[in-house]
Length: 190
Image (cartoon, rainbow, N blue to C red; front, side, top):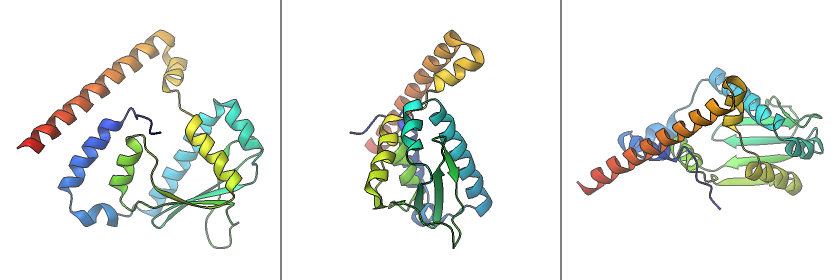
C-alpha cells in the first residue's frame, strides 16, 4: 500500500522539470565521487538519528550485527553494516571488501523519476539478491520506522511552538501542492 508522502507536491514539480529537460540529461548526470561519499555519510547519520528514536528497530538490528547490505543504483554502490548497537556504519565497497549479505539493485535509472517515485510515497522498483530473512528485516524497517520531525523540533523550541510550526508547514506544503496541481491542469488544458 502506498503511503502519501508529505512531499508529493515535489513529485508534480519534478514532472514539470522533467518535461523541460532534454531526455538524456537526467539519466546521464553523474555527480563527483566526493559528493556521493558526503551524501552517503549524511544518509547514515540521518538514519542512525532516526534509529536512535526507535528502540524496537535497534533491537531487531542488533540481531543482525555484522551483516551487510549493499544498495546499487546505476554505477553507485552504497554498502553498510549493522553494528552491535543496532545502528549503521558505512563499509567501503572497493574490490576486496566483504561481500554483502543482501544486495538491493534499484532498477530505475533516472534520478528524476526515482525522486518522483519516492516523493509520492511509493517504493522504487528493486531487484533483491541474497538473504531473504535480512531482506524481510530491512523491509520491516522501511515500513515501520518514521522520522518524527516535530519531536526533534520540540527539543529545540518546545512542544507547543514545534506543533504550530509543523501545522503551518503542512499548510504551506498543501498550498504549494494545490498551486502546482492547478498550474499543471491549466497547462494540460491549453
